[in-house]
Length: 334
Image (cartoon, rainbow, N blue to C red; front, side, top):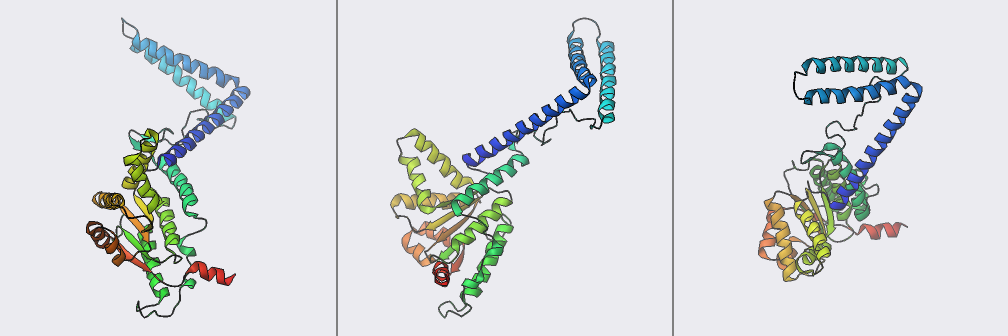
């Protein structure tokens, strides 16, 4: 998974905060127990001392320390039993003062070796949804709140079906794609249609569901994506180039890229090259992509190179959107 540096940084900060909160609670409990049971405090000091004695005996040169180590260990165990009896006898768990991380798997570090721990993945998911919410204005948008009532049940002759019948099918495919992400028989979707027909809404629904299932999701407009590729290649500012390089790496490596409004950008030779790199690299790496665009596939063939058009047409499931502009319908109802 390739979470954005901002998402990962915020998730790690939250993990660190949780660790500090746990340690503060543990220390407060320790002070409470020591004040109520001074003998427990004394036992803890003795346990620390006997541990040092065990280490010293093991390292002592000359002679066999086995008997001394066994004696110290026996005293240590006796102290631990007394400590447990004191704690349980006064209403505390026997292990109340033991340092127990919230995540036993990683010890609250967030990492198991070089692999991200599940606890940090959960936090990354939460922070990623917050970030996506700011970009996509997620609000309460979900597949369950998608309103098919804005789509006419009357058949459009040019399509041979009604907008509502079409959107029922589109909605089902988008929902199934998101809920079965990585296992669905379509790897990539191309949402095609005019503005105001629900493409961004369904993109947001896909982003939310896929993110909630623990995958890394990046959403951005086509214009911004290509601008970042351009900054990476041509900027003379080292910091700008580094940040752009991080962004383009995320576009290439995230589990799901949602590329919004393809076709709104100026189609320069550089944009053609960047789009080909983006599409081809993600296909080669078997990374999933959802593209939304006002363009039809005929438009794509006329606007982009044959190599790009071939990949979009051959590797993406095209979902047509048609009907009356929902924004205008809402305005008319006010």
